[in-house]
Structure formats: structure tokens, C-alpha cells
Length: 571
Image (cartoon, rainbow, N blue to C red):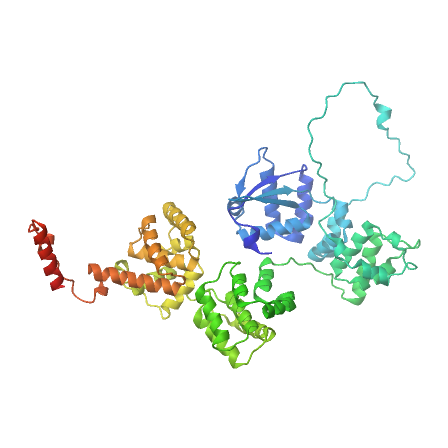
């Protein structure tokens, strides 16, 4: 599950309550469900419940939930999927050109008896709260009724009390889809290997016709709860056989508990929620379960296709093609190895296809005589494993430190006047730290950093958003452009000024932060030499014609040409 693809703060949502909810349901959710999934999902559930009780359907963005609950969008996403998995909400989605829309149906909890009869939920709760509290809750929600032994039911039937009267009923023109009230949590029991179970469990032991859909679901949930395979469940079913050769859900649950205690542990099994961020790490950084498929991909795919693949099927830049083509042609590296290198560099570096970084790794791999995709993948994996535990924290941590870094960079790269007004903080690795900062920062956040943590003006945000949509620079280059424009204009951003800079950068085919710094520095130097305003001019200001600042202006074209000739001669 990748968060950025699943949910964004700007996504809209509405809330509906298909079934009436009462204080009894609130009690079930608080006492039975909250121990299972935690307080944050339950807070989201009650928030959506409150939103859905309004008669009018109100369309909110997810910022509304973030502000109401004090939760990040990542926390809201984790809470939402926990509620979906436990059956407390159902989520629907549609998209158009501008927004994504979600509809959240707030579902009632299961009836208490169904909850405690469910092998998955009951064991999940038991492992969370312990035996004493579990028995107390079960007693509270499933009280024993008064015995009716020896008594005869004398309740009247409907037809004993009421009689029909002929009336003309209007046609029912209002049709509404019927929504069934949930009687179970969402669980795909077909994932269990029933084929292997049937092969190992003969008809003589248990006739397969007794394994009804209800029994199959109980088998699958029990296997999931205790992490049993099909052969384990065969033994459980044998223990659960009753006198009439049938099995019941309660007998299966009891037999599974005994089998687990005898063969695994006396401590109850636990169930933990999967972490979306961990799944994302496995998918992006490791080779995962797709190892063989990736080896084949790297062995059979051209470099151009791999470059396109890591760039979302966009055409790669010529400089990237030349960089990796040289590794094959000039340095005689195998194409599959270079393909792995492309993939690894893209996932490992926030700076894009940095030439020095690529050549350093390539030299190391060539020295180790790596010649196959499998060897290269193993080398990349080993390097990641060695690097991960010892990764140093970025010394530029707080907002003010980042501002000082940006200010120092402006002073050193562009000789800005604003930076010369105060003592500049020095940084040992200025350019490296600057590149790292602009590569990992969103443009709107960059505005905040440029103003030393102050909230950017709404007009500046709009200017930057419109500019970004129009020019489609990569974020690192866009941030460098904003940095350059902000400091040389002393904080006065405007669209024409940004577009003027962008036009120059496009002519120079600026694609990296290093290129952006170089072009901006040269542009600043050129302007300084032209107007003699900074130390870039290389000395004293050039003397201007006397008539510029006096009343001795030329009266005709001949005098003007003569003055221009003298000025050029002096220059």
C-alpha cells in the first residue's frame, strides 16, 4: 500500500450511515473493537459517525479530518484501512480531472454473539485483553437468560391479532438499492488451501459434504488466527469430530486451541497490523518476492527501456543515455549489470542520475568483476544493508538552520546584496547540503524556509503553483530557481520575473541543480559586470558619459554618435 497513491489531504469525501446506530453500538465499538485496532481508528470512526448524522451530505477535503482529529494524513490512512479490515467502514472511490472523491459508509459493529462466536475476533480480543477481562466482557454482553424449562409459549401470532382490510395502495415508484447489514468481517476464506485439506482428509474421516460454507469459513479463520496450514487443520478437524461424525464451529475452535497449546505454545497467538510504510520499503528498496522476475527483466531489457521505466515511461534525457552507454561501450560493462545500476541509482539517490555517483559505483562493480544481473543485485542489496544502520542524520535539521544554509548559499553562489547585510554563517559542505535540501523539499515548503519559517503569503503560493504547472521543472531545479529569484529580488516574487529566469534556464537546457547554480551564477555575474553593482564587476565601476547626469545632452545625431564613440574608446 503506497500512501501517496491511496490518499491525499486534498481528496474530497462524504460520509453516510446506511443503518441507524445507537448507544449500544457505541458501547460495542468502544469495549470490543477498540482493544483490537487502537484509539486512532476508533476516533476516526466516531468522527465519521458524527459527520454522517447530518441530514445534508457535506463534501469535505481530508484536511478537515486532519484538523479535527489532530492526525497526519498517514495516520488517517492507517486508521481507515484498520476500520475497513475490521468491517466498521466501507470505502468507495471515483476520480475526475481535478479531484478524487471518497464515500465512507459507517457500518454497525457485529452483534455481540456473532463477535464472540467468530474464531478470529474472539481470539484477537482474548490475546489483547487477557482471560479475566475477556470473560467479564463476554458475561456482560452475553448474559444467561432465565430458564424456561417446564414453560409453554403462549405468544400470539400476527394473524391471531390482525385482520386484512381492502385498501388501494399507491404504486411504489421509489426504488432504492437494498444494502445488507453486515453479519461478518471482510475475510477472503478462499485463500486457504482447501484442495490440500480435502486430499489429506478422507471421506471416511469426515464426509466432505459436512464442510459447508459456514464450516469452511470457520476453518479458514481458525487457520489464520493460529497460523496453521492445511495439514495442521486436518489434525484439528480430527480432534473436532463429534459423535455423529460432524463438526461444528465451536468444536473446531476448541480443538484448535488444544492443538495450539500442545504443539506450539501455551501463550495465545497475537495478531498485528501490517505497517504500510514497511510494505513500501520492501517494495522499493529490496528485490522482494519478484527476484527471479527482476533478474529476467534486467537480462532481457534494453538500457533505454529501463531508463524509461524508472522515469514513469517518459523519454530519458540524452545525457543519461550517454552516461550509461559509455559504461557499456567505453568501460565494457555488461548491459544487464548496467540495467541493475540504473535501477539501483534511481532508488538510492535523491539527486537523480548523478554522474559521479554512477561512475563511483560502476568502478567498484567493475573492480569486483560483476558480470551478471544476479551478482549486481546481490551487491546492491548488500550495500543497502550495510548503509541503512549507519546512515547519519542530516545536520541541517531545524527551519532556522535551513534558512541560514539557503542564505549562505545565496551569498556564495550569487553574491546577493541581502546576504551581505549581516554576518553569514559558514557551512563546511555548502553545495552538498544545499543540493540535498532543495532535492528533498516541496516548493511550498521552500517558500516557508526562504522566509525563515514564516507562513508564505497566499499570493506567493499561487504564483509558485501556477508557475510550476506552466513550466514543469523538476522540484530540485524549481526550488533552486525560487531560491535564486527570492534572494536577488530581496523577497519580492512575481510571475514575470520567474518566467524571465525560466526562459534563460530553458535556453541553457538546465536539468540539474548543479547546472541551475552555474547558470544563475553566470547570469548574476553578467548583470554585475554590465551594471557595476557587485564584486563580480572585477574592480572600479566604468565611467559613464558626463551627459548622463547633467544638462549637457547631445542636440543632434552627430553629437550623440561622437559621445558614444568616445565612451566606447574610454571603455
